[in-house]
Structures are given as structure tokens and as C-alpha cells.
Image (cartoon, rainbow, N blue to C red):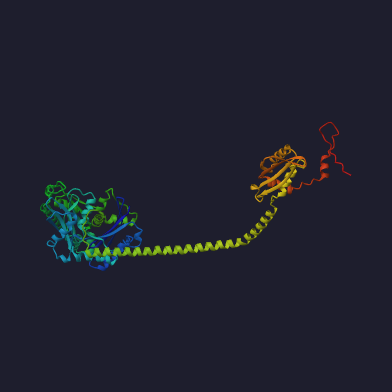
Length: 594
């Protein structure tokens, strides 16, 4: 299964945070994280260099479209968070019922009259779609084009293109939902200059707002009251409890803002026209005033000592400090196990401030529709750039493949040529011995041909004469041989004349027993009178046996008998007789012959 990777970036007032997720086989892993600080957000050069350093600390994950990504099945997205203070929201109710593919056009038409600024300079999207049989309602999210462009410019300066821009309140709601938030909950993320207030019910964002009160305000107040510099005031606010001066004044302002936010969330929930009794999912819920709710605190400003206890007493709502990193660690499908010790230290120190980047990652990996405020021209540029990179990477890969084929062909050709030359050289070295062997073989074949026995008519006549030495009883006439050059097919025909019928029969039996002739076929015996004597005549046909050639060769070329030294043989046979009747023999030298 292909991996999907997301790098979520949150650029705050004094810190920039990045987290990297990897999703594979149903498991989500937090594989990397980083935080950098800077003193002045308005110093774009300082912020850009800090973000560049942060990006490098993550190992500079490769963007989609380069050549290596063709061999990497991982899908990487870079998503940027946009502060809630730069975003406007409005519930668009009583929209016509429409399918999802038509709803975007309907929202675009309705948004033209509802946006708080000119349509030409606006970027908008929507979420939290609610339907009834008669109408549809959506939450419209909008911002100025220039606001998004200023944040995207930080990434463009380091050569990174964002694929989406997620509002911070959407990210906070996503983190809360993934950390087990089931009942109505107020999440308060106290940053350096702004505080984001989110109301989450049923695992979805129902209301949000941002107000200008954060940790910097507390630092300024302590600095003025105690007459110390900013660095000392920053250190002191970590030790002064929330209900003690001078922190108590800041805490009172925070309580007031939270009361207004809770009242606004209650009014928004009551007036949106989509109470639980009317919702299509049939989930029942009561008014906030009748429902048990709780409040979660997170962010750097929430580290003020005893702040949760003071807010719980002032708001009369159960309040607790919420570390989103520790909350999501409890989920079985989310793993946080970086091997790098430095990353572990970062997570331990900054975990309570990562609600926004964590939520950006969760929102991006969610398969459902997630709102994005990425400008259309930036999305088009990203698509075009990705396509160009893919084309370039594909072309480069094609060049590499063609080059590899050509180089391989050249190498193979050189290798084959070298092997051919080696074979030719070896064959050349064998040429002289082969020529000598061929000459020797020719001489041996010639000698063999000369020594080979060829059957002649004389061999046949000689064999016949040996079988019948008495010529007074039998005579041969009209001797004829056909195909004698092939003894297996040679046919012999001759006439016999005998003094008696018995003499002819004796001759025929001798032919059958000879071992030289076979298929003896005599014709009809006739008689004639010659010189007042009766002569018996018969024509005989026969063939040679397979062993006839060897028999004729032995007769023509008899093997020489081994020569035996007669003197030595006589000496060996002359053995002296024993001198006694026992089996003992006397050793005597044999007598020499005269």
C-alpha cells in the first residue's frame, strides 16, 4: 500500500511549528517535529530564514514530481495553517437542496452577498454541511487574498509549495476530535497575540472566534506593573499564579472574553435553525445551558500557574489543561514514536502548543471534504508545476532508460566482440593441430582402405574347391556373380554336374553347412547322356553370409603363429625324477644338450 505523508506548518507570532505524519495500512505515525523561534514576525527575512532552518531540520522531504518521486510510492503534501483572526465565518441557511457536486456553485452564488469584503479580493470555502428535506445549511469561511498570500510567500522563499491552507479553528477541532472529544467542549488555544475559541459538539466544529488577548499582553502587563524588561517579565509570568497580581488583571480580561465567546456560541447554536430535533442524523442534544460542557486549555499562554482552576471558578465550567500530544497518544490508530532524541525533547517541551499543526495534519489525511483557502491561481500553479515536474522527471527517466539501453547495447556489443575475438584466436591456435590431425586421419583412412579385405570371385571359388576336393564326382560350369562389391546383397549362380544324384545332394548339404554360403536354392535336376554316360545337372543360386568376408580375409591373410624357443621348451619339460618315494624333490640343474 502506498504511503501518504503530510508536513503541517503553523507560522505563529514568535514560533513556527512543523509536524510530519505518515499514513500507511490504517496506521498514522508522527514521524518528525520541529519548532523554531524568532523575535519579530514583521521581519520577513528573519521569519523566512527560521522557516528554512526548520524545513531543513525535517530532512527536506522531497516534493512530488521530481525524478526520485517516480520510484517513491509515498505521496507528500505540505499544508499551511491560517490564523483564525484572519478568517471570517457565517452560517448560510435556507440554501436550496442540492447534491454535493452542485452545492459548490450554489454556495458561490450566495457568498457574493454575504462576504465581508469585495469578491475580487476574497477567498472562500465552506464546511459543516447540514441538510433537511427542505433546505441546506453550510458554514461559509472566507479571508482576504492578501492575507493568504503573505503566508504562502514564506514557503515560496524556501522553494516549497503548499497544497492546501487550513484555518486554525478547523485544525483545532480536528485535533480535539482525534483525541477523544465526544461531549460538548470549549477549546481555548491561548497563543502569543491571539486566543482561538472553538466550540465542538458531536466531534465537529460548531462555533469559533478569535480575540486579541494572549501571552504577549500578559508579558507587557507584568513588565509595566513590575517595571522590568520584557525578558524578565516573560520569565516572571511562568511563576505568578493566575489569581495573583499583576497576572490577575490579565486573567480577568480572559474570563470576560471567554464569557462573551460562550454566550456567542450559545446564541449561534440556538439561532442556526438546525437544532438536534431537526437534524437528519437524529442525534439528540439540548441547549448549552442544559448540557454538561467542559473547557480545555492549551497553547503557550495556558501555562500560567493555576489558570485552569481560576477559569473554572470564574466560568462555572469544568476546566482542565489539555496537552493535545498526550491526548492523541491514547488513540490506538495513532503512533508517536520518533527515534531521534532531539525530536522527543521538542515534543516534550512544545506538545501543549501543537494543537494547530497536529490538526492540520489530521484534516489533510481525512478522506472527507476539508475546507481549504488556497487561492485558485496557487492551486493552478501547483498543478501546472507538478505536471511540469512529472513531465521533466518522465523525460529524464526516459533519457536514463534510453541511455542505459544504448550503453548496455554498446557494452554487450563490445563484450560479444571481445568473446568473438577470443574464440577466433583460440580457433586459430587449433588450426595447425587440426590440419595435422586431418592429414594423419587421411593417411590412416587410406591405409585402412588398403588393408580392408574386398571379396573376389577367387575367394568364392577357393571356398568351393576346399569343400569338394574330389573333382571326379562334381564339376562347376557357368559361374556367375552379381553385386559382389556389396557382399550382403551379392547373388551367386553356378551350374553343377555330378556323376550321380547322390553326389549333387552331398554338395548341396555341404554348401548349407559351410558358414560361408546361405539361402542355397537348387533348381530342377536334369540328366543328359555324354559319351554313353549319364550326367546329372542342376543350377544353384545362393548368397554370402555376413561372416563370409571375415572368413575370406583369414584365409587370405593368416595370422602368424607365435614363435616358441624349442630349446627353452625342452628345458622346461625335462624334470628330474625324484630319488625317493617321498614328495620331496631334489634340486638338480637340468642337463645341457649337446
